[in-house]
Length: 339
Image (cartoon, rainbow, N blue to C red; front, side, top):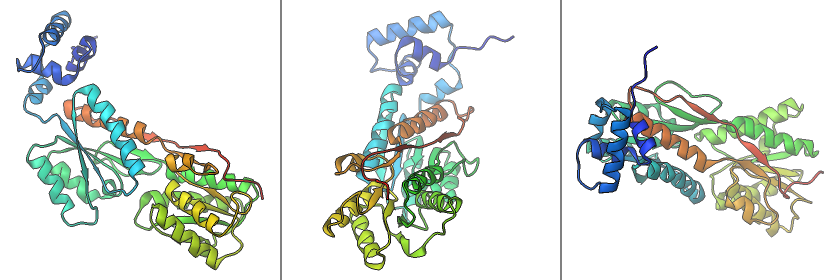
């Protein structure tokens, strides 16, 4: 059996330093302390490490990756950013944070320019940008390394490594929780035909109702955005057109918090008069009163995993990381009561 040759990862791990530090020592670059240089050289000698093509590539490749997003939810962005930063700091990489407008004609130009000028070597795409096959293909044609985060029970294709989050199963589980409490007229707030996370959660909501033998009531499905203000507006619209709803499913916690505010304005008690659930387990769900029953979406962990996959792909492009799926869990609080 052939003995596996030591890699730059082995050297970095044993020396307790980043890949970047090992690369600098191997390439005899400046800005490495004598202590680190001595430690790395000792490990190189111990392992009989021979720099390979990856190490030589690292000499000129950018040590930066980009987190690209179009999302109004500041809590989501901060949690994602922190998760990516944790991995970048551990591996010696820099992070470029790039908010953009996914509907703009300039978004592809922005990203290809970042790649073309060697500003970044890899990109983490989040919804809705990650849902654009055209954008992903264009970045790959520019020799960019790409990792996507998408909504789904499985990766949509094999274009690039993908983290997929099963919104549908979680949407079904939280709707089933409301049904188990006796609720039959359950509203869905935040339907958005172009937002796959919304569609996944909506499909789960529909599946739960159908499995329980109930039809989806169209007047209880309200379109809107993933914001507090939209949650207020959708709830006001819902309560004006229906007096039979006993529970509502906000497509994220901001919507649910807005719904709670709108219910209070109408002097409705939560959960006695109206049960409310959210999605994501953001600070909104923990800072409201009562606390919101929701679905825990570990954004920082998802982001850290995406960063680890991307850094691995940048360092060893011949070894494509495997896709990674996340199942989400219910968090039960006080915003739901039996009917």
